[in-house]
Amino acid sequence: MCGYLPHPDDIPVELTFRPTSSLFRRHLHTQGLGGIACIQPRAYRRGTAVEVLIPSLGADARYPGYIAWCQRLDQGYRVGVAFTDSQALFGARMGEQVCQIQHYCQQHGKTDEAGDDVQQLAEQWVSLHADAFSEASLRSIST
Image 1: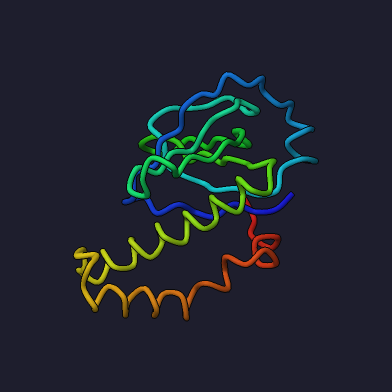
Image 2: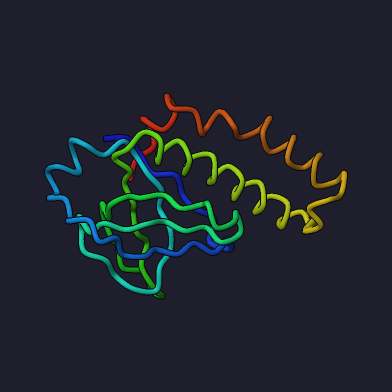
């Protein structure tokens, strides 16, 4: 199974239940293509069918997946969402890149998305970090 991209903690992400049946843990291990890891206020059972929603990316930023793991933290839970569909994985990876760029811009005090500074920061982030989002590098990310 591939690794999980860490979602920036300061960019909201929501998980909603899908009416699809759950996957057994062994099926997740063999069918999971990789996924994202995000902080959530509650625990989730492994194999639960969810939809990942990233509000800052718009209403179409919805990716179907399954809970692969859930780790208790001091405040909340870090949850791994596995994708079993290559299109969902691709969309989520692209969405995560945008979230990482948003996070990078916020770290540099730039939140005006229309400015040239934001464009330069986005280009800087891509030159520094885009390789980490390649399919080959995702295989090396550990949970």
